[in-house]
Length: 216
Image 1 (cartoon, helix red, strand yellow):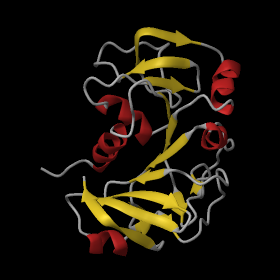
Image 2 (image 1 turned 120 degrees about the horizontal axis):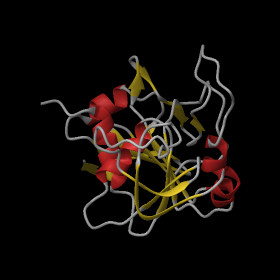
Image 3 (image 1 turned 30 degrees about the vertical axis):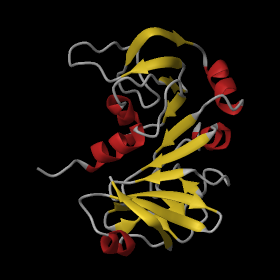
């Protein structure tokens, strides 16, 4: 049975989260990460709309309209969870108190710059909290599919407006795990369901293949 790409990405990202981390999950694919935290690992999920202590999405029929993530999807609250206003939420984000943020992406380039807010041909209200998250979190993980409609999303240079000039720390797709470093994009892992040749073919940016290339 084919592996769902988004599930594979979310599962792999979840293994980057360590005990006691305070983690922000962006809208869309990143919200799935909360469903795949390894057993025995306790992570505190924060949403910029004002909650720490988010749990997985609720079972059908147990949704609470007052418990949602930043993308308005239903979530659960773990014992000890707290809610607060947007001002306090952005104090946490801008003050460098987040261990990790997991964000979706439209493009990432060879310098590790992320573009994730301006969707071509669509009206958008603005960059929103993504700029603050990329700038303020201690570690930035981009969780996105490797291509969009057959076109590479890991490119030589972003053609869309950048979210931040900060270099992201890790890129996880359904095909690869890539770490931006000073020399470029280091390909650390490839999926069990793909080949190195396919990853290189579907990536516009130049990749530095690790001498210890692993599978996930």
